[in-house]
Length: 636
Image (cartoon, rainbow, N blue to C red):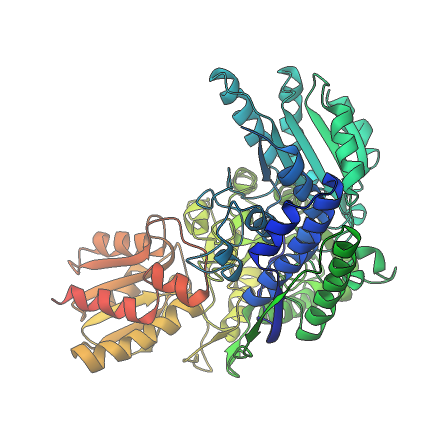
């Protein structure tokens, strides 16, 4: 589930042009030869796409490409469809769709750009038949498609790729029984059994045991093969073709297949984490990987009886490093958590297969007995935390905000009804990073959690406020809390007073002004609000007060009224949908106080696009220039 966003690779990048894919698809050879050569061509181009974008998932793309290549080139016809439920393999699938001619070749250069290919599957992209979200949805979607096809008398098979870590999601198992009861023989599920999930080996989290026997028990036709052997996969598909039951193939694959040092089988037994799950490789690893793939491609093309392939290159300048003053809130949280754990022996940390992304590695190393890896199963994790809280522990529950706030929402509510104390920490919050796309852009978590009884939602504005708010949640909050963290390094043009201490419902003025008050939270919004305030003063003569209000669902009415009473308008910024964001709480509070001050909301109103951070913030109206323009319009 991890989605690290790093630096794009500088220097020479290599890819194969479309004419080479056309040549291989047309060559006079066996289907196995074509698909094997095609899959490595896609590996090279997927590697190029990830290196150029600075993020993406190499390991999962590479493990599944042999299966995808065979399906696209040799198996699927007519109304047959394929989609991936796991979603991390999008770069590999994009490369295959481009190589097959379904997508415009120029999109090879536009992974995770607003006018290009989103980080995770989206039906706005030709060839994508469904969106991904939290894991486990794929088989259910396939059932719906199959039932619809039958009602419309439309033939066609449905092929679904799932990950093996994905099998920790309860929905996967829920989806199997009715598919067998309905005899949905047109569904074939391929489990990309590459043995690893984001944090570690699948067996270390939830050992799948006799997976074939489990699947058969649900009434499915089950087969197993080497998923990186095209001929073996093709033969397995043929052997189960006429079975009247829904079908599942356990495809044993190697994560990172095709590059020796990226393959998980090359890991030493004491390696704690697979390095190529997400993010771009560094320049030296990229070039070594590209060279290995290109050398093998040239050898295999000669063996297949065609002339050597012609590669193309792109020279990419070095990316700008994060500013020296950039702050990293997840790292600050990691340090603050250790401080609290040293003081509270009943504090435990739970993780959902995101130990690196959520900053829990230091905690796990220092307090191994108080760390619980729950895997890709947020509902189970949250209810486990509920049981811990009932028995006297202080659980701190971690995942990406997009999954933590919504997937186990009913379980969080159940915990709230028990009036225990649990701290939920959601990283990757907000609309950026924009590259992963809407499945990972957490812009509805405030609305999902704000009404939970006894729950206080906070978002720190900088490194210093992280520790202060965590301290408040641990030591002062009477009930449960939710801490919202951005995961990007961010340059912050303000600082907190040395004597600042958070007071529930009250904020801190970062810039003085008299005409309009901009109220916001978090580094992204506040830094852009400060920049916008300077533009407004210089170009429009508008004096702006910028207020940091880290409390997302509680506002002290007396403080708010006294703080903004001299202003002509209040503008609320939300790194979230406008409906249900902090702005709603502020507007409700001001209306109740009868101030009569007009309130303007700036936030999301539609599903956010995938793209670079600059592109996405501009598109949703949350960059400095857009904020300044909107505020200026209030005074026209």
